[in-house]
Length: 364
Ligand code: SAM
Ligand code: SF4
Image (cartoon, rainbow, N blue to C red; front, side, top):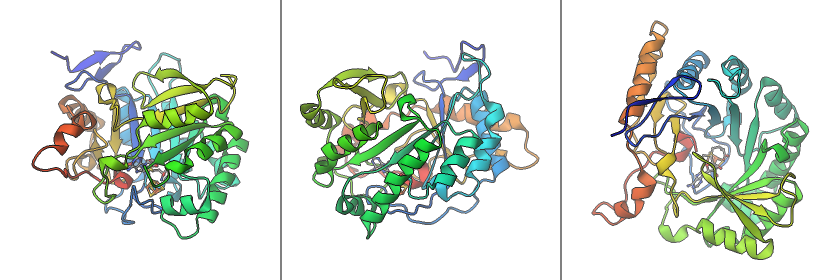
């Protein structure tokens, strides 16, 4: 029997879900729109009505932090399309933990495709108080980038993302400290020929590369199990070129880490990570709460559309903060989802195509 809350080292009560998992990360989507059209994600380009305002977003973040969230990840859609991004980052600074083991935010991070990350924007994000940036890039050739990003001119996107890496580095996001990383989604027979060149690119630039298995998020990406290249296969291919040593997966983390044997572990680019959410799910210690740009809270990336909790009734100007906190606590206490673990079972049932909310809406 799992109790509904637990006391953290800092003496605060954190809600537990029905599987005993505490709340630890808030992934907040700022927009469902995107400037790219990656076929594995396929945003519909339409912003949902009733987007949260800055004060409403701050209330959601405050409530999640009070309930135990230590990390805030800003995402989308493409979060750099949101003009108020820097203002939001600056506004959450007072929520930072003041002691290493104390309550409050420990990390504020951003996931972006990087196309709009100019030198000026990177500096503005850094001065607003952003700690980390993860940029997404799924290939090293114009043709593969065009295919994976769903654009006509892959060379333009590639050039912009490579420039974005340097803008972020120059603004103070140090890859050796883990403040700048690269995400790549790998699809079998689509861009798995890019594995070695992506690893080489990340190694040359001193970045940790995070290889993500193609996931069955959303309903429009035509996901089939055959299109997944397992994390183990990715590690095998890269390890055959540059020998790797396993470092394990951090508690509540999504990525298993590997170290390149030929690199000094303290240097940037010494590590490779793989996110094996399909072949080796990590639902057992998932601690993520997701809130969409229009204020719907979801507790699983693979949730069905319409199954989230609309937080807006508790975000009206006259609503008391306690109402939002109770709503989130109730949602977390009811949480039992372990979709990724149940995937095989679900695919063998009469309904082999369970519906999922779209990735660009949920916030990847
Ligand atoms: N637009 C930003 C970006 O691409 O980085 C942020 C949002 S995107 C939804 C967040 C992450 O989800 C990206 O790294 C993207 O590659 C990943 N992603 C999207 N759809 C995916 C899928 N079907 N399987 C695995 N990863 C996916
Ligand atoms: Fe846009 Fe990111 Fe989805 Fe690609 S993965 S379409 S960049 S939201």
